[in-house]
Image 1: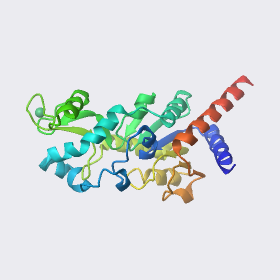
Image 2: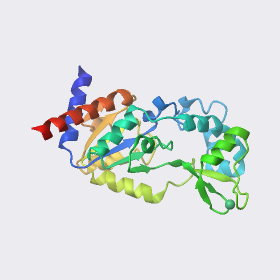
Image 3: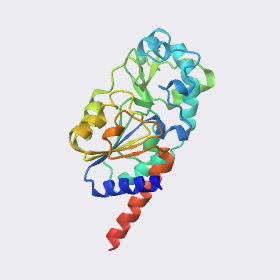
Image 4: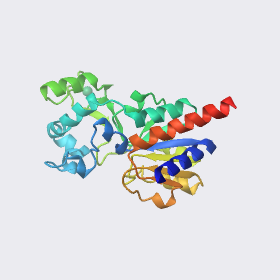
Length: 260
Ligand code: ZN
């Protein structure tokens, strides 16, 4: 019952808002089989230290170790399909109610679900860039070959090592994307945080700037977040269960009001 009430509160907020943005994290993609690669619970760090392997310094020194670590994750990303929560956000955008999805994820599942405007704070796994000459290409053929033969992908031009366009530890975030995300967070009047525990900057700072500007905040996440106390509604539930229900209810209300 408490969940029903929270959901209808969120539906009210969405119906009243003029400028809505969503902020998504690893929690939205776990149901698609992608582990949170930054989390100790992902099982990806049982044998290796993230700061040695998935840092930019580690990558430069030992690209082979990085790619060995990446291999199971690359297989999961290749096979992953968007789930009901990704679809719900795409539908909200299609209804003209959602301006943008700001995401910490690199899996591209929002775009696969049909979201048009996605700001990827941690880069994406669709492209690779040569660390030597800067040539940027689609990652697909490189990753396919690499999953087959396990060899470090090399630049077709200069034989330099190809690096996925994913932000590694110790690496700067894409500046333009970050600035755009900050501007969206400040200008919105409602932010939906979906599947993020808001522990990693800068995503963790975006809801605070939203809240400072007087906008409303909704959190849908299984774990508590540092900004729960500022939120208008907190739903401690799997985003794959809660978000589609919310968007269905919003669509129903819209069709009712347009038919009236
Ligand atoms: Zn090159």
